Amino acid sequence: MIYLDSAATTPISKVVGELLLDSYEKIFGNNSSPHIAGAIAAEYLKEARDSISSMFSIPSNAITFTSGATESANSIIQGYTNFLKRSKSGRNEIIVSEIEHPAIYNTVEFLEREGFIVVRIGCNEKGQVEASQIQGVLNKNTAMVAIMHVNNETGVIQPINDLAKRVKDYDPNIMFLTDTVQSIGKLPFELDLKLVDAFFVSGHKIGAPKGIGFHYLNPRFRAIPLIIGGGQESGRRSGTVNVVGAYLLSKALEDKYRNISANLRHAELLRTLLIRMLSESSSIDCALTINHQDRSPYINSIAIKNIRSDILVEKLSEKGICVSRKSACSSHSHNKSRVLEGSRVPSGLVDHILRVSFLPETTEEEVIEFVKAIEGILQF
Ligand code: PLP
Image 1 (tube, rainbow, N blue to C red):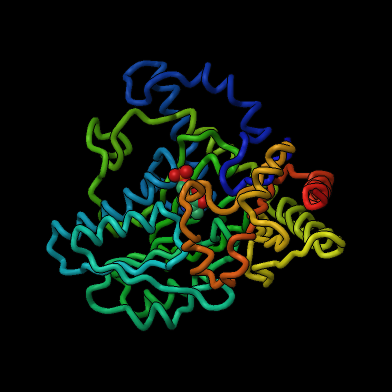
Image 2: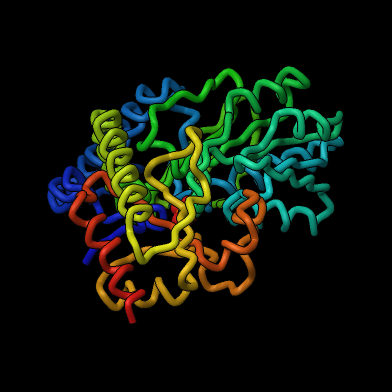
């Protein structure tokens, strides 16, 4: 199999695979238990939290382990807006971009039905949100602004620090949240946490198992917990903690940041090869939808104009090659992609878009084989 869909999910990485069995054997206790098995689990959980805390220079009490990004987004957004409602703050407006993942987009849409005002911001022709657009809609009722870091369909990087600065210059009490699922562990961590109040990570996008993630929330902002129960994670998220998951997530992250520059160079090399092969092919009529500097080389949005992408994805799959049209979460919807349209991808290309996303382990041979497979499909 050739797997070129890392934006949807990743297999566990080598480092994590080597630790997996041993971790499940060693760390089976409940970290809240008062005996030695519990103490061992508590020790591993502390190690994981401390590692993440120093990696991102964030206080360990601002890290909450969750089941992944969707839960994290809901905990932050619903937790904070519930707090605002309870405290009768009067702040009832949320600003989001048109290109957010459903984890954020649909959560704020839910809140809109509950009475919040949601302001949706489009992108310029580069697929980026402009600070001036945010500035234009900020007001005294703005509760939070959520703009994702790297888009999961196009790979476009948003200028998060600039956007957050504009918000904080206007009013430091507005929460600035960014979805970092497709950037953390892939791009050097450069978020300015004096400006950005919250971000979250999903293990299964970076070589850790599914069902684990964490979020950072600046302790200055209160959020009412979504999951109530035994008070784990200092009351922020009840339920027995997935300690093995947290430990493996921290190890996956350590591995990613150790190799971040080399992995990034490799992804750039693969992207260059992909583009060169596609453009040199005599049978493929290809358009690059995003081809500027502010994009992640891990996620490549290409349009093969000769064939509709739903057909191509199916035919490639028959050959054992996995790519996708858009995000896995929206692949069952037949609607046009909100994200591609919001990113100003020309409407004539939308039905032809493939998302080709690399792993650090993806090889040049796999990219070559992928392009040859498309050529083979187009011959028939
Ligand atoms: N945000 C982005 C940008 C994503 O790509 C994804 C996964 O597709 C999510 C959020 C949701 O992640 P999870 O599967 O951990 O809930």
